[in-house]
Amino acid sequence: MARRGEMFAGLSVALITPLKDGAVDEAALRGLVDFHVEAGTEALVPVGTTGESPTLSHDEHELVIRVVCEQAAGRIKVMAGTGSNSTAEAIRLTKSAQAAGADGSLQVAPYYNKPTQEGFFQHYKAIADAVDIPLVVYNIPGRTAKNIEADTIVRMAEACPNIVAVKESTGSMDQ
Image (cartoon, rainbow, N blue to C red; front, side, top):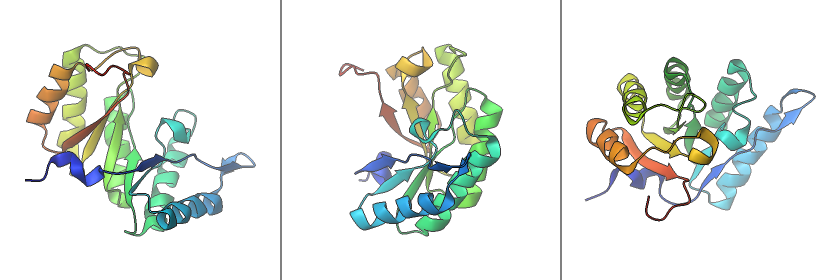
């Protein structure tokens, strides 16, 4: 029996967002997609935290996802970075990514807010309930100042069938 997370098994690459003269360099971004298709990468992660997501405008964020999905054209999976510390913003960005053709979404844990474990659960459940694409929870307490505990992740997975995997970045093998 296949496991939920297998759809993103293999090498997923967090793309940089190329900029030129203060704007997204669409030609360079398309070139990066083609490079990874030719290299055999399994999935691309545009506008994850490596891709300048905290510093791009909302329009730029959506543009990057749209360009990557368009250039990927089904040749490579796209796991769009659409997480936010605002649940409403994460839902809006994830709906936009779904409309653009993303295969899934990487959802960084809410940063700065330091939610409780119940707060994490409610945040991710609201996003999962709002979209049909698979979600990957991104637990990176070194950047968000709060760990999503294993029990909370299990609870989310049980309640939300479209939560399919965790990008675990605590550095703890026990976690």
